[in-house]
Length: 290
Image 1 (tube, helix red, strand yellow):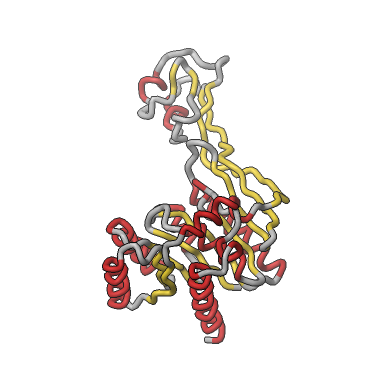
Image 2 (tube, rainbow, N blue to C red):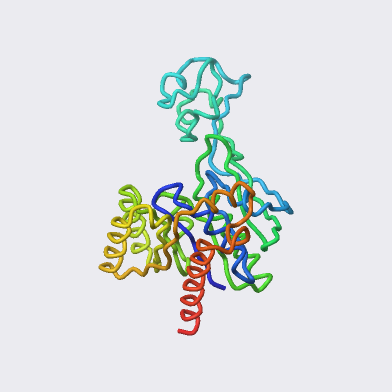
């Protein structure tokens, strides 16, 4: 079983569109949406929910009204201004626990926080593990780890060949949680200045964790000069270009209809995505033989 993560240094580069097409192309796989802060892979795959589980992470302060003497010390010292009128605002509370330590009558306790949900669903392309983080909730790195753990369990139980994950954008905690231990990372970028800058950042994260990166340039024909710059920069760093995908309104049409683009059309974009998947799967097969 091989695990592939699709990442980008910035949002909106087309990760989910590409993962949705990989879902239609790959055989014997489980899919995982690790972008728990803004999960949207389910919009393309139309999953049927089979299991829903709560995700508990972090703590929130709670004031016992019967014990509270309303001395005001907690309100005065809370640097997050989360306590007003001797009540805790759970959205503002950071769960640091300081108020519980300085309360003279021990009226404040820390309670576990229900931060969101993770799901196991069936799609016409295979099982999907995804999640939804609650409003203003943090610790999404832990939720990413939970999603990956469930995906691995399903892959082992069903003897599947691949885990294909739609990763979060950026280089923060959720990216680190989704990247560590995978076999291959496909980095999707665009031929823009911000895309080029953020690609370098996520390449650095891959190098730090020893994960082999490949690059896919989406909308490559919008700025051919920048595309050539990305190709030459990757060549200098020994990073392989796994694919170049042209700009085409057919992608938008497939998203509107809620189906992967390779299922919607057999045109140029579909051929380019199929070619990219062939390169990825060939590399993983050679890695298994090696």
